[in-house]
Length: 202
Length: 232
Image (cartoon, rainbow over all chains, first blue to last red; front, top):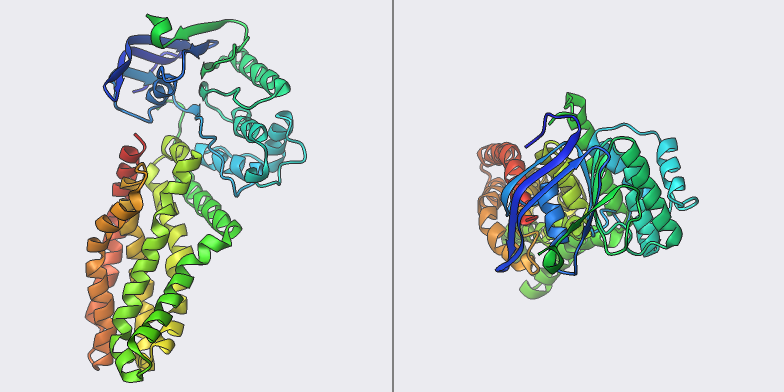
């Protein structure tokens, strides 16, 4: 479903989800408007990834309703990079998927901005885990999506990398975008809202 | 969908970008690309050893052996069609962004055929030579493989999509897909046998072409739907 209002990017109401007989969340209401960054917290196995997949529309196995503003960008815990391809080629593929034409210059700029100068032509499987994460997040610099669904974007990033993600989120927020991030480390982005899952939410 | 202004060229762009990407990936891991072909040629050699070198005896079974091996070689490469993308997370991105998804699936099928089916058809004359198939029937063999192997890729894609989320999907994939390959096998091998018997193989070839058109039209939709289920 899609939303007609301009400021609301995502509206989930009365979400209930069960996996293997365990109820992960029940009657969860969540609205993300322009300028919102929601920090999704909860212990391992509390359903953060499942919630993000419900919100992204990757699974329909839930009760309740989700309306989202398209296009949305989802970064899963599986990086979404082809190991045989270079970061540049991966970004170009994302461009074709999302139907935007991007010249090599802007793709390179996005990679440089994520601290990957000199790695644009190295196959992703030869990059370190942190570099791969940076390459995966570089597409957020290019996407037109106003709604971002990020699953643990800070994983395997060093301090500088985390700062880059925070800046990215902050800029996105100021540009009228919205995001929800499953994370274990505090995002420390201004105006962040917290959404708890699991025992802590009760 | 408010902001996704869908235009016609976008579909074509998606198709070519996805094919180009899959071909690049295949070129970067040549080992996996030549696997089905090596399997095919080794299979032919094994039959030579197993049946014995008598040219008449080999020639009698050549048609069936070449077609069955082509079928199994396709199957060998089929498991990775969606699974590798599933493992690295690019499949869910394709499912989220490819609009419509069946175009992305069609592109993956085309790329799959270009790296597995097409080489099989190209190298079939070599296999035919090794098995002493009558040279007069070789053009028919190549033609039926050119028409038949895309059908194998297309039908196989539906099975591969359905089993993508399963850890040991490869066996199940074979069980789903092999029975569906029977018509292709009958028509393909039938055409070559007809040619050997001096009968006009046109009916079988036309039927094979019809099968290709039919499966190419419908299977990408089925595979796209299968992927949505498999990604759950």
